[in-house]
View (cartoon, rainbow, N blue to C red):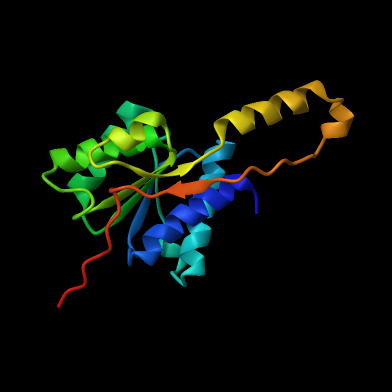
Length: 178
């Protein structure tokens, strides 16, 4: 499994281990290789936990702030049956936090939110964002090394980079009815 898939697999697994079973992926964009891989990791995590294929809910809005805000606002207006959001990246997570607050809900008490990339401001979001940290500098160095090599040497080559989850305050366990 490639790096791009393992990050979303792990972050979705983090939500599942906190008891979430109704998780939305916000920020899909069919045909975008990186986002398709993130959706695949999300779906793989749901399957590993034995959830049916129809449990996967992907909201295709891409990674733009305005599109993400519109999509999250509409999702909250239409339904509130989900307990968590996996955002395609941290900026989509930021606008999801805003839309949730604008709807009078709280993160993580009402809805947990996770992001992807762990951009520096993620720790300053309210609440601080749990996110997949990607090794951006290492990725850049690897890209330069590949670009400088002979194209025949790198054709079909893969370089896996490790990601990790940075746990902050945007995820809470699902409260069980008593």
